[in-house]
Length: 423
Image 1 (cartoon, rainbow, N blue to C red):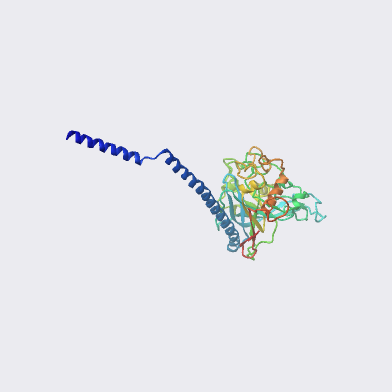
Image 2 (image 1 turned 135 degrees about the vertical axis):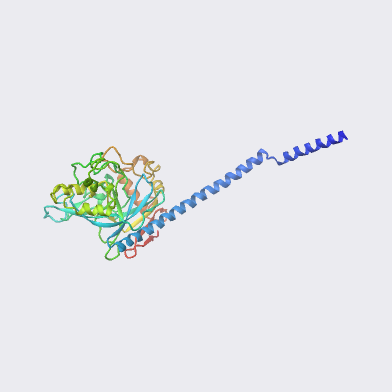
């Protein structure tokens, strides 16, 4: 009996071992499982990325379509001209569309050279009248998913303004890539798809050309701001798109702790600082209309005019110079880079632009030409224009061999709706 029992135990153990052996995976089976997993992953990841890309594109389209209608709603609900302003801040990394309302008009002295066209009889003080916009309390700021961008169509000669005497001046988009402030530059007479150049400036400089300490200084306040963008604007009286093509100012305070009057401003000095304003609309209206802005008891003095321009005018880094557009283009910045032959995007700005030199108050807005080979800024601007237009093989003709990646829209003047241009 003992032998029989021992024999049965041995059989049980032997059977258990055989069972375990049968349930284990061989190396070949493991490799097959891993291979199947890799195949599934290879199929799933691109499908997931495509789904995310399609979703972000839909979000961008929806935001863009909503923005134009929002501009019209602001005009109708406030009784003042309404707009949406397109802003890009590299620190945020996303393009924002900000609803805005007009609060007044600022008169600035001309930047035009005498005798640059128009009337030969110059007045004593030629000027520009700039409408001033601030963020509207009605409506919310819209964000477009990362890498999705909007450009505005600057029609031929849109980069040239005329002052009160009819003389030509170039204030809008004044980087070297667009001919600087030379109103006679050939590139100024052409059409361009412009990007919101709103985040490439020295944040600690109060005014263009001013020091990096945030203080106001005696500088040429006719220098245009380095911050430029475009807007969709609607007339409050008619509810249709504004016919004004004049440049306007949008109050968009820079993110800086260095401000005029130091860390201990007086109560009056506090009232002049945009970063201490409880309501940007009230603050801007006061800066525009105050007769004695400096508080020296002398109304409408030259110092009042200079301070006004430094705080809210075209020389201030707290404002953006904007112009109305009637056409928009939506696209992926990464695909634009690839399409024009770039090796990628600037790692700091995630665009084709260089970040601002924060140590230099006179810094220029520049493209990152290190991303491209043997191409200057003028050629880059031309290639961007063609790519947005749909000429992706750059042969000068939009044909069947082109593969347009951008989506172009016309703004309906009476409804604010966007109509896509099919290509």
